[in-house]
Length: 226
Image 1 (cartoon, rainbow, N blue to C red):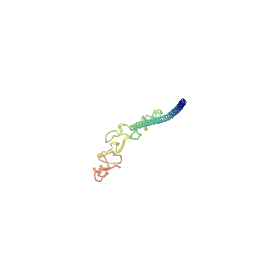
Image 2: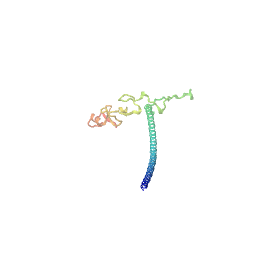
Image 3: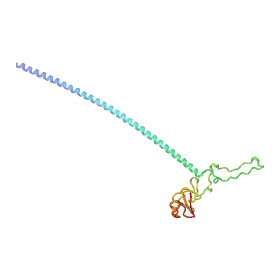
Image 4: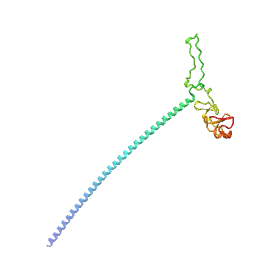
């Protein structure tokens, strides 16, 4: 009986240990399955992260492309602006050339043109073979001003070209040379007074210098040009 009891107890312990080992194996399989699921979730998360990174990279590439397009547009705009500036510069150069020609070429007027001698009538001997010998080297529309006939500025004693001429006090002046003798202010034709052939501004110089009446009525020797 004692042997039977011992044997039964031993078998019971063995079966219990076997069941414990079986439960441990089940738990280990469960842990392995959990690790597999964790690894799968990690792979899925990494895949999603790669997709998000790909989207971000695509967005960055699109932004860079838009920036390159804007930069190209800015370069083209700068090039167009430089071209417009060069065109304006060429226009100014052309105007400068035209202005320089205007200083030496003026429309013909009776006083500027040289006098031409009327050709003699053909004699009976020469008949129709006689030719007219007019001196027409300078066309009427582009007659050059003869330097010997050009007026000189009373102020600087230099020749006065047509483009820079202003007439006052019966003389031709350079525009910058027509100044008040007292305050040195630049004057314009018809807006100043004179005394002894010298220009003065109406107010205050003329009235202060030549009488209390002012404005060109200070004396019999002076008058106001209007």
